[in-house]
Image (cartoon, rainbow, N blue to C red; front, side, top):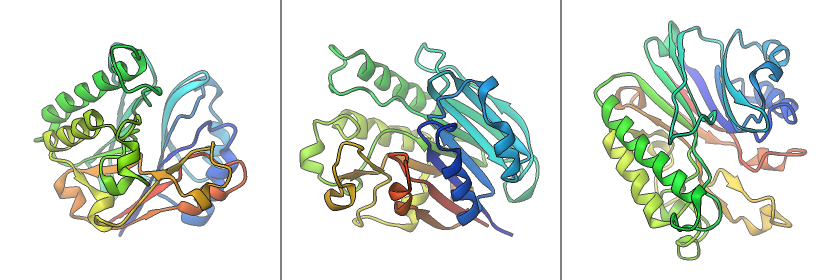
Length: 267
C-alpha cells in the first residue's frame, strides 16, 4: 500500500476551494497540507472539504492572514499547535497518525514568514522575525532529531540551493535566497537530520521551482521561479518514498495561487 502526501500554499482556501477540488480530482492525495489559508477556524469551508473525501481535518487559522490546514483520509490521534518567534500567528500544525502507512508518524505543517523585501534585520522587522523563526526551527529540529517517524512540509519561504532559483547570482540579495537564510536552513536540516525528500528524487543540478511571482506578465515565458515549498522527512520515512511531483501546470490554472502543489508518494 502507498499513499500520496501533498503540500500547497493555497493563498486563500475560500477563494480557491475549487482549485483544491481540482487537485483532489486529478491527483487524489491521501493527505493534503495547505498553507496561507487566510481563514479563521469558524469560517473554514469544512463542508467542501468533507465532500472531497477527507474525514480527518485539522485547522489552525486566523482571519485574513497566515493559516495552515491538514486534510487526511488516514486517521490521526493527536493534533498540536506551537507558538513561534513570540507571535500567535497561525503558522504550525502537527498531527500524529493512528493507522495506515503513516501509523505513528508525526506530520508538521509549517508556513514560515516571508520576511518582507529588505534583507536587513536591523531595519526590517519582518526579516528579523523570519530569522528568529528559523533559529527556533533549528533548536526544535535538534530536540526532535532522535524521534522516529516524522515529516515536515510546507511553504518554508526559502529556496536553499543555487538550482532552486532562476538566477543564483541575481537573487543573493533577495529575501528567500540570501546566504543568512540558506545557511540557516541548512543548519536546521542538519540539526534535525532531515532528508529533503523532493531532491532525493529530483537531484541537483536539475532546476526545480514551486513558486512564480504574480508580477510577471507571462510567468511561463520569464520562468523566474523559486523552490519555496518543501517536503522533508526523517531517514526512516524518506527511505519509503518512491517518487515526487511538482505540479507546475497548476500555476496556469484559472485564478491560481502563486505556489504549486508538491506531492510525495510513500510506501
